[in-house]
View (cartoon, rainbow, N blue to C red):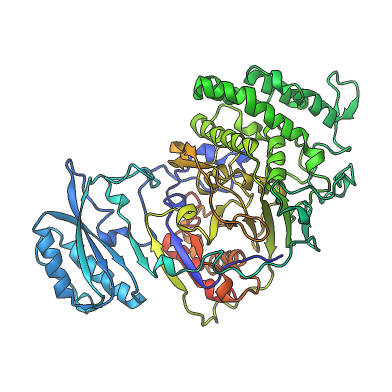
Length: 619
């Protein structure tokens, strides 16, 4: 298959997410597959930038009881001496302006460095009208113009840990700080995309739809039209164990015999139209999961319907949405008619399916119909939603359920007609990093952006757990989990993908965003509906491409500076961003951030090396 991985450009967006994770004991639970995350002492989350914010006087802003002014200097392209810059700053300082923030465009690395040196000197002496500096900072900086603008800002310490969309205009942290190449100049899809080959099944690429049906005004038709293997490849160990497989057996309700499990599921869900409360959901799920009757808790599911939702919305969900989810789940033998292969370790492979087929798989996960995974728990993530239904981490799980129910509400009202591709890439050949003579690519830095917003049309990085999805169905609620919640079709990757090895990544293309949100970790909150208007490619996939690459968790800070650790992260970034032989002009930029620099303990300055250095080596 054709995959547009990215080489020539890179967009570094600090999403203020991964880098400010507050780790706690609950985030290390085994059922979240997050046990590899090292525990760190809790601390107040502070906004952090890929560029050291202390250079710009932001991290050191004092607490103020009244609004103060801040000086924003836009640096463009002409020759202005440092003395002129200082004179302008001194003039504004005398008028009560606070810290300096700079924006640079069309500057070389040396020019940016010199500007940094100047601003360091200015900020170090912000209380005085005159500025002293060392000799290096006295050099002229190539700029086109210096433009000073006053902005009223309410200065305060700390922050929420994530940029709020509408309500942080009073904070110094909300001031945009963008540097490097103009973001508008970076390559994006579909403008830079090469022509896709015709969609077809091939060795290593399974297509679950009838290709000739994808251009019609309806969800694509299933291929083949009827089930050819009622076992769904259960016995091979290479396929997902499907709930509707004839090999899916379970003890009968009286425990006297072993029976087919799918008829039990059908009997439990077929009466969903008459359900009155979440107690009926629990009763149905337990009827075909009897062995977990005493161990599974549904306390949080009941709280979600009884207390969290407004009464009218809870009633609508119970009367219309939940029964529709049940009907969609029961269509599984109709919508998936061939064995669904696992994306297994050590082999590059891909699966293309319709958004309707993905919704059907998620509907079965909602009702916990998937049998035990056919690999050990150390290789495959969990997929059933029972881990969301208990009462721990209540706010996180309530908000997760809100995202998921909103997704079902949307797709069951109007089923999307596009496709999704999940592509596991495995590589064994890597560059000679020590001997590389490649130069850094163009780079844009935005300290206030979010990957899903600023990275539209780019390869967007999922700060993945080695078990794809991380704690999305458990207690985790950081960068990866949040992305999977606002784009729930990504959760299908948990069903398909074995644990990522050091030379592997997962690329997910076509997932749609359904929800807006605010906050992060414990403050995460569903806020509203999101209508995704990203265009579709020739395969009817949204031009949203997400790559899951897992960083190494460091229990000891110094380990990451060893040659072995640095090489591992370089190779992981390479496999994620490798261009699959595409010419540079057809490779979009990469939208990333402080990968692995939160609970995983990564150093931001060190980690920027793998993210930047690999790009020119990925052709």
